[in-house]
Image 1 (cartoon, rainbow, N blue to C red):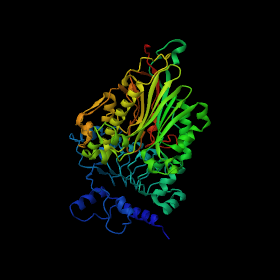
Image 2: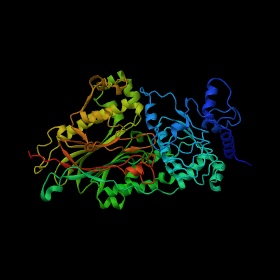
Image 3: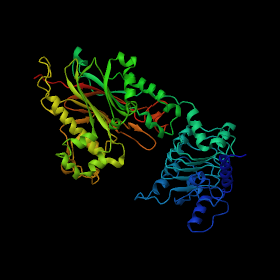
Length: 598
């Protein structure tokens, strides 16, 4: 008995073979839009209708809501680069795009001009029933494509770059001479319909398609394909020579790492990652090897639970380096049993006891601060006038932690902060409020720390006379890009109360007076214009992680550079075999600035 999945393959092949006339799909869409009948031969159905089993009724053209553009063969044939000027000149000046589907089917085309791949707004492309013997890897430039039909050609292979087409939902390769599928197609986590009939593919692929359908084939390619070559190591960027001379040059030098390690409970959404590479045992080992190799004097990890924190501290490699630390889970842990509490992610600061000694450590729970401090309202009775504080900020359980340390060799003191704030771009007001609450609490703590006595022999005596004189580092996943208002607040020191990111919500003093802080912060990576990205997924790749420092206290002397560009160009996102998190790690080297003893 033929399986349901293979019945779909037969149905797709039948429809494809009936669609060989020139511009079949464009003509079908035009006819239907006028309320007329379809041209001879049915048109292919949308992925949704096929997945819902609607194979017998009248089919829906793959054009969907998109308008078609029909181009003649001459425009797209010829030597590489021909037609580029035409393509550029057709871009509307007002950026309006009236068509997003292109039908070049049934034209007898033998070669594709690379100018075609400048049409990066396309979401549907039909180059079926031509005479193509190869598909250029440049097809991956059409990153918005949801439907690609190359059926009825003379293709013998598919380019590995096809795996970079992260939005592809339907891919038809029916009736070609393709003998194998590139393992890179395992990255096509959104692919719902793959038409393969009429190709000399291995029986193992055909049997898998019949048994488990498109998703089964993609999973097989993803999980059992060869592991790609690892990236080249990230470069170490030297920014400035050490301030001191002679044997004391290294005394005020220390390194700080920051890394969102991706909590195990959040890994279910990464459908492009091999299942084995998402297993915690595999990722744990990779994370462990990476952070141990950095040998950082201070390490700040986000999305780390108590069980993992205790596990890392128990490792011989951590003991050898004399690491100790401080961990605090997200606020939800308060309502859980001890066993469940250990699985709640939070923030951890590790530091070498041979380099730093602890003076104090404290958590900052944004829920608690919003409801109990005077940063937003003068007294608790006033909270009832600001329901947005209850409904938007107090419902989030993000946290930060603070360690007040003293450098063993120099006597310098510093506050080390590790923070993780709201991720959802819809809640940009909450991000801003949480950042404001963090800075407000840090000012309160710094004022307290400034009053702590120093030993009589300390060279720092008389240096920490106010909050803004306390050296401070903030390692964070701020879920905010360098053009965001949160970045502006940290770097500029002020955001007006009427800023649009508050989105019209009322947050007491923050929206009435604005948010300000006295610290002169700079992102360590701003010294090289920030990294290209710190978070890399198919739907978002940008900078959201930072190591901020007070510029009156530190000089940045070195930075860990960006990941291998060539490697990154061949993947659609992290995590994967070589990057165990969707974030990359940051590593900065600092030197205390010279001070005059009091």
